[in-house]
Length: 547
Image (cartoon, rainbow, N blue to C red; front, top):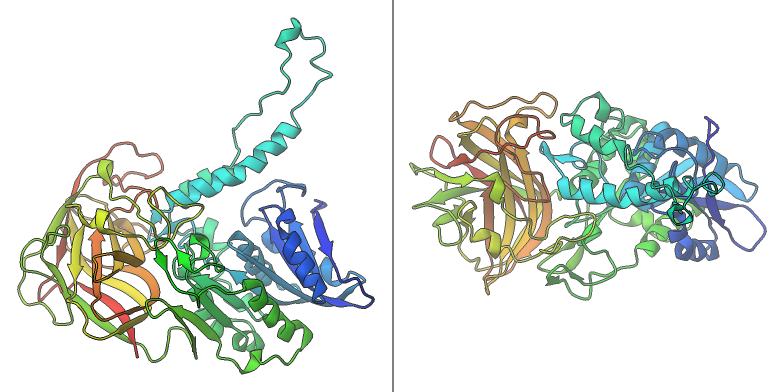
């Protein structure tokens, strides 16, 4: 690299004379995992380069997420393009953090980068990666950091043995074998993430969405309805279509959304507790290679004549090709929150209707951080919780008194919810800070409550991710909770349901309700949280209804 640090890569190439396009993957997860794809793509006429990023596995240097990916990505792309068997065209691929290595390289603008194909990745490493709506993505941040720290610790172990120095040790049975490495500073970025809960310069330097104009290559974005980075995947596609740095890049955006992502992959039909049928599984490698056949080899395979958006519609369990995302034919519909009596839990009287409310009493519940609503399935990484991953039955959470449940009547004909989903809420709290969560649910005729998408807002960030502001207890606040998006057909007999609460733990950290710095807080207080749904404060669920 430009600063003298050596990064190591494996190279797979056709057993033939000539020059070939390069497919590059830069990963923190061990380049040895790319053997199968490397052989497959080399047999198809590509040079595949799999590189360990800085500070990981065989590469030198120190690991710190995002910090070096732009400069290292630029240097690696240009090195790859100059290899004697390269034709000078380089495409990148891979998912999750490997999507970050692609976007951050593209922002640096290496001249020989021709395209990127990121799978399930984010658009912003503050909101939608480390935080969401101001809440800390606790399960992801802690499980991902622990998983990555294993290799970092192994590298310390490998450098901590000094058998010669220990030869003088007596008695012999006190020979230490290995010096136990310190865990101090094992993952400094984790504490840095906690130290920067707001969207400040620490995050802005790496934000993809703040640098779309610097991306000058076509992007094939892949993602999934139950993926932890779905919001960023959709945002990357929609905004790059208008904000990318060249007309070719703007016109070259493509999007594919399947079901599982981190929640179960693309090669099987069952994700979580739901079987989505035989049409769901597809060959992700083939989808990517077919796109690169057109982009890097100029093969006339019809890619340029296809619609740019392909989504899997749940419920109907069919693939659909669309002209754009959000789907142009979908219309935003408000489902207002109603309750003739308390809406707490499944035994409550909460309903959803397109009829605006008149005068109704508000609903309230007590949020106790020491007894938080458990995460049941949903978009998780890395690895499932004991309560599952992806679509799971939400009734155990809905039975709680600190969850408000609002449900439509059963639909007599199919209704397609396809597009962005959000909550427009009027709320108050007895605390100076608390969270509000929302979850969209498809209720089957047998009662199974399938979660579709979810979101959260930390009240102090109701006005800005950059400038938190505590609330005045009892004051009514008008807030928006982003539930991202879904595509799901509610079949006849099904119902649409909304859950509103104040916790989803341990996916998100528990708001302690004190207004103190969350990273250092230990003191918890209960909060009485109120949802208003009357004529002057018409709280509503906003969904996109498609033909």
